[in-house]
Amino acid sequence: MNQRLYLLDTDVSINYLRGSVEVTRKIAEVGLENFLLSEITVAELKYGAAKSNRPDANMRQAETFIGEFGIVPIYDALDVFASEKARLEKLGLRLDDFDLLIGATAIHYGFVLVTNNVKHFKRMQNLSIETWTT
Image (cartoon, rainbow, N blue to C red; front, side, top):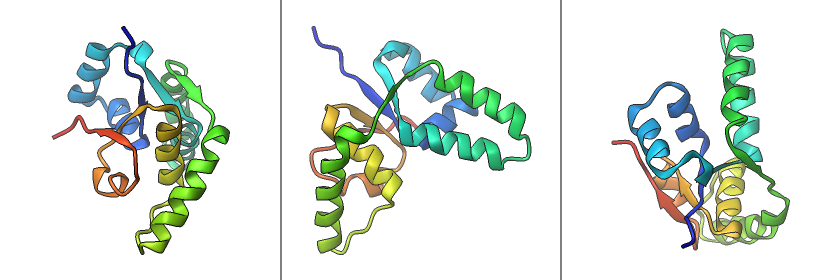
């Protein structure tokens, strides 16, 4: 049986780091080994820690979290990024480049993107999305 693989968006990762019961429960239920992070999410988590009021402690927390997951490179998803960005711009539907890169990575590899930002990500074609917070 093929297990679905999930790509955690930055917002869900932050919810997990802040102790979200829903996200923690779902990750435990599905199995930590079935979750991955994009290089973009890693960059965003490190940036968030660096600009925080407690950069050293938050960086350690982020590094511990990041170390729990496989990291997915974005390079192979850049063609999807380019075509989706062009398609969305022609429709007048802009999307932040980092979000586009995370979504393109999920599309390219066939991962389910776990995000709370459904409003924006639903604009992308062929992207499987789940949201776990109410």
